[in-house]
Image 1: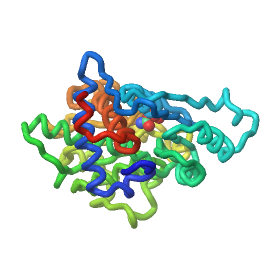
Image 2: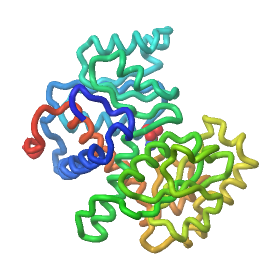
Image 3: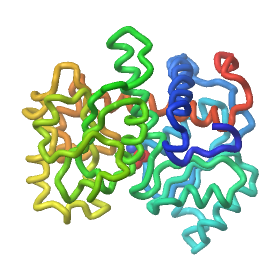
Length: 321
Ligand code: CP
């Protein structure tokens, strides 16, 4: 990434770009562990979160990341803005851009909106999640979390996810997280299997760089190094595609008994927000093998890395200043 570049899709990064973000994230994990977790790297820059759809993690994580880099942060609120009076997305973007901001973090329920925003704005644009399409920083923080856990476990600086068996379970069809994660995991060498009922899997695996798809979670669990559960997305009418929520949970939910099928060193992940008791049992979410809160914590450092690589003009040697 180079200023005034954008981060719109994992595909734009390629393996080298992903590796660069993960390497820089290591420095920002160290910054985040300091008593005063702040560096002057983006002093004078302004980052705006332009969220047209709800978010807790992504928005707060980006705002925290920007503040820890000493950037100024502006938060666009749909209900309190002129968008509520009918202002078009384009006019809103061009109005904010005219204020001289440096980056827009964009979330929207329609696929492709961050690309449109990038064509209208003169600043950097980061995709914070567009419809069913992509959520690149979620994929980056997930890759970082897996790689960091493997490094700590092995006591090595393992760089790739070569041969790691990752099962992504649930509503794959409507999931931007699944799309970005399949791209990122496969680029780093992991073997990805999609698991879910036929109605929630893509109709064809063409274009999905995965080892295969399965409707048998128990069979996949016993072989998996990582089980990545997806939220059942009620706002996307997923329940209408299922006989019942109870049956979904019985067949594809990671219940406590089913979690016993996992290998001792297998990790459980979830992008949040979780439906406890639906795709994941409450007690499984809190097991030591669950790295869900680590995903959130690493998300701040990874987003610091993304903002720094897009907007930072100083070499990485200055990070520790
Ligand atoms: N994982 C994720 O995107 O969560 P939020 O919707 O809370 O941002």
